[in-house]
Amino acid sequence: MKITGGQFQGRQVSYRERKGRRTTSEKVRMAVFNILGNMVDFENIKVVDLFAGSGMYGIEAISRGAGTVTFVDRDRGSIRDVKLAMETFGFTNYEVRSMSYDKFMAETKHALSLQKYDLVFADPPYYDFDLQKIELVADILAKDGVFVLESSSRVAIPKIDILRLLEDRTYGDSHVAIWQKI
Image 1: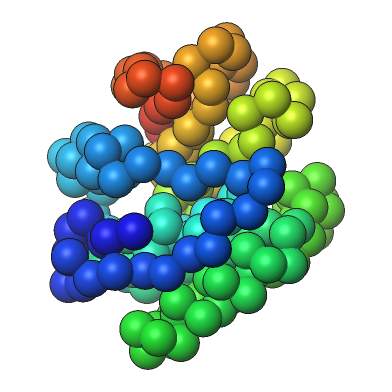
Image 2: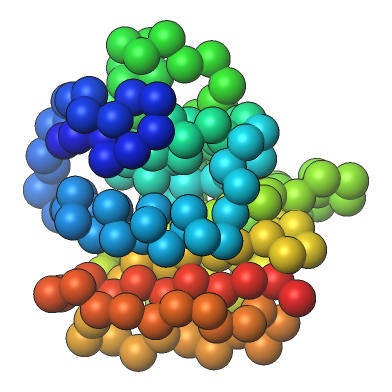
């Protein structure tokens, strides 16, 4: 997989395909970051890549200048791949958390009394996750923070009352929704 923009644009990231896992296509990532480029100043922001898998959303954010990125995934193989990519590129501004979404949200909600995330990516398994749980992201998102959800185009996106929907796009089987906390 290739990084689509920023300081490391064009560099390859190795990732081992796993049963039951899919990676976000380069086309979708490029589209997402083109949209975000008009609404997010990546310089030194705090990012979390939920359901990280290959970690490409977080890696793209680092390449564009993010201050810190937290990668969260319950799959140990994915976590190993993300760590290897970070070491390969010499990135030091990251944290990797091997845990479920529910556990991360519970721990983070209690620990984030002072600082929250400026940008949150979530790319849960298309058919093995209750999208209604995604509304918890609002609790860890900073004021004016941006939330990107990639889901199946066959599944309706949830309504999140305290977030304003900015973009709602479909790319083949992938649906991308982008919200901002108001």
